[in-house]
Amino acid sequence: MIDTPVKFIPIAIPITGTDRKQAYQFAQQQPTQERSQQVYRNTLAVLVTGRYLQLLGIDTDLEASHSWNPLDRLLENIADLYIPSLQGFLECRSLQRSDRKCKVPKEVWSERLGYVMIQLDEPYREGQILGFVESVSVSEVPRSYFQPLDVLLDRLTLERSPQPMVQLRQWLKRRFEPDWQPPQELLSTIKGEILQLYQPQLQRGDDPIRQRVEQLYRGQSSNLVQSIPVHLNPQEALVNLLQTTQNDEIRWQSAEFLWELDPQHPDCPVISAKDLGIYLIGHPIVLMVGILPKSDGKMLILLRVYPQGQLSHLPLGLKLIVLDETGNPFFEEVKSRQQDHYMQFKFTADGGDRFSARVVLNDASFTESFIV
View (cartoon, helix red, strand yellow):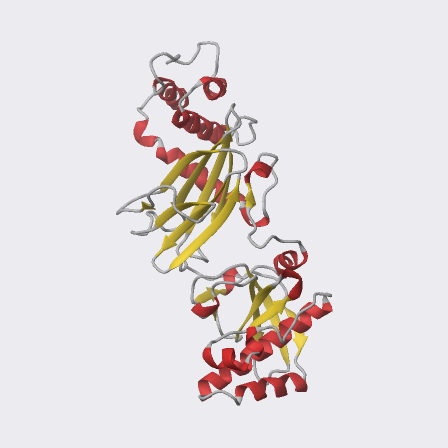
């Protein structure tokens, strides 16, 4: 994977003599030269971040931060800053101009509001705030994953619940959370992947689109219409099938095909996706979530995991786990095998149901919580 840095202007924050004195004092308390240098830079990163947030009118509390506790500094590689308004900690990680990646120790991969990346170079007269990362589960984060500071400000200034959830009902109104608004090319890739899922079922013919719709009609139970009504074109036939079939699997396949043909059609499922590369040790993995309302008020939900980029198959042993609102799996985990192009899970949920989707690869994982 080639790391191409995100292009935006870093923000330079002065480092005062008092800042360097404070960092030196903390550094002198460490048992080794390596730890001393580590604490020195961590302290400066926290002070730089704190001064930046103060300029924006965001309160911080150094004394409540673990990085200001002598015992915590001695035991762990931490650089956190407490944000009272959110009752949480922001991690402040430093790197040098020559570094293509920022190192993030495992002990700070959880219980953080996010991660601010600060460039610090001798003689430590200023720190440059390069960007922000929402969550981390890898030891090194490439510069290409740094997000603009607008994302950090949104995170700090908007009211957030202790466990924010993706509001799936809002998706039906085309209101998506910021990190569930994928670039168009990612959705285009997914559309191509969906098309490939049905390729083995298709036979050669003059009208493969109509042929595919015919297959969907024939896939129903015997007491339903098993051929496209002659007065309907394939797209109209898909809409008719969506409105009449009692088979949820056929409904999903019809809806996905309609989405391929016309993503703006009102009967399409709502589909979005998230690139999980930063969470899964740099593997280019995408989590797709699709929702489709039913006439009885329930919601059909599809979770699907794809490889992307140069990765043609999912990594062996990748897991997809769905958890209920108590944190317990409500079905046996799905695990990728050799040569799997994707893996998925479909289920039906009632309004107000809560669940979490977890994607796991070795020691790295990503979890997102949803409410229907």
